[in-house]
Each structure stands twice: as C-alpha cells, then as structure tokens.
Amino acid sequence: MSESLSEEASLMVDPRFGEAVRLFNAGEWYACHDGFEELWHETQGPCRKVLQGILQIAVAHLHLERGNRRGATVLLGEGLGRLQSAGPEAFGLNLELLRQQARARLHALQQDQDPAPLPLPRLDANCANA
Image (cartoon, rainbow, N blue to C red):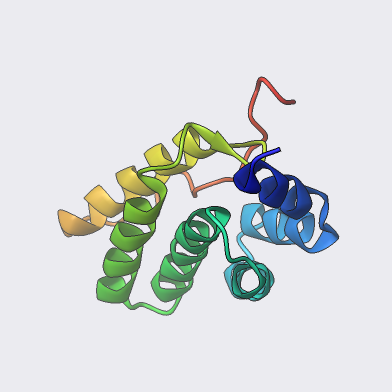
C-alpha cells in the first residue's frame, strides 16, 4: 500500500476525523477547525495538503460569521488552491462538491455579494463509497 493510501486509511478510521467532518457539516466551524488542525499537525504525508485545504475553508466560514469578509475571501481562495490538485474524492468524501460550493461562495465574496443564500460547503460521502 502506498504511503498516501495508508495515511488516508489511517485518518479515515480515526474517530477524531469523523467528528471533525460531522462538526464541519453542522457549521460548527471553530470546533471542526480544532479537530482538523490536530490531525493536520500529526500528518506528514500527501494528505496534509488536503486537510489544510478543508481547514482553511472552515476557518473562512468562521471569518464570515465574525464579519471578516476579507479574511474569508483569502482563506476560501487558499483552501481551494490546496484542494486543486486533489482528485474528486479523498477520505471517502466528495471533494468536487466541496470545491464547487466553496468556489460559488468565493465568487460571491469577490463580487461583493452576500454568500449567505448559497449552500454552505459540505463534506459528503462520495456516492461511490456511500
């Protein structure tokens, strides 16, 4: 098994990962940030960049909640950049959907529009793995 696959498999069975995903999907941005950040600090391989991208999207939404549109815009862009090289899925999650949702919200912010009517980014299970 390659380093990336074994690292990804280890993260997927870590209960902290499942809890961080649950918190992300519940819009508990601060709490999910803490969970993903802990895993990110412990990860040294190729999965680290994907975790960082997810983290940055979560923190962008924390910035939005606090009225910091500029910070949200920067972090959404950075998070999307980190997820760009990832395939359509990682950790059994539909990363393409996450990227589409985050991209739409980033575009709204860049156009000085309110992203609130747009769906919040989600970490849904990939249909093939569900």
